[in-house]
Length: 400
Image (cartoon, rainbow, N blue to C red; front, top):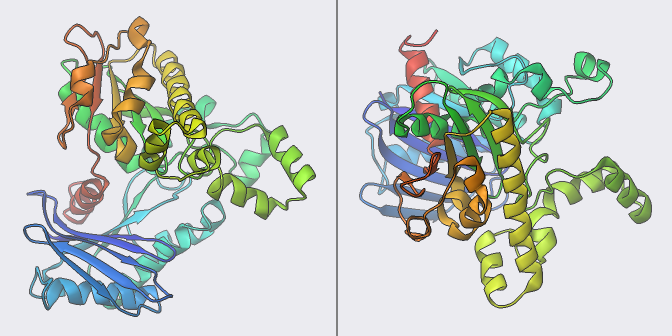
């Protein structure tokens, strides 16, 4: 089965063409600057790359261009769109309505539209991608795979906020969590790598420009760091993460900020870029630290310290930890962050091996010492495979 995987953003479009059974990826690509001037970056074959600047006024033209690129010209990998069996869509927010992936129907799209207030930047673009694919490839099954679904197993005492209860019953104000496909993939890989197969206690640190931590018991999420929106939790590339409401009120009063302006500060001007003053890209901040920039040093120390606090709290929630996992662009590549997070965790049975930690690899690997009671894993995530595989299982009737 060939699955066309689509991740539609507000002005961008990521895609892959994958066979989830063989796990072969035929093409990977990105459309950027949709509605502005437009560029498509297409990778296929044996590391062959294609980059074309072309006008894409709307997402429809972008998807049409992707399908043309897949079926014609230099980047061709299939003969026609008839070779595509199904379309799998990344869907950011499923609220409490979707605890798993589902076939896209009119009712599903209607419910996703109701959830737009919970994800005003993401759900409209996700819905648009689904509707365009239904129009361009009529009869092809579409499947929605929700970022929030994996976290729907959290108990009520973990997902509820200590606010007036009516805020939950009337407005759905609670913790939902995100990056669910990544947390699922990595935690399942970790369970396969562990000698222990039952009552597994796994902590996953998905660290990138957006970052989150989750606590997973026996394959089920019991807590996660992101909340109603992705701004809660860890310090991220441009997001603040956890911050007291009093600080927000004080900033709004002293700076004369509206709620929209304040949210812009929290989402786009804070985190790594806000502290370092240099970049939201940790690689540049690490370089700045090496050059003696103390604000870059501070940003690095804060990142690791906040992650470490979450690891400690989730170890308590899990009554111990069998595996601590690092994934995402930072988690997979920043040895210094892993070292700082794991420093001093020997009391909970986690001992990192410096030599293993500093060895770069694109493979899943154990970086703990031989004598460590708990394991420390670096596991490259594969969210696209989760989307493709869920699509395959639903379309094939393997998952009801």
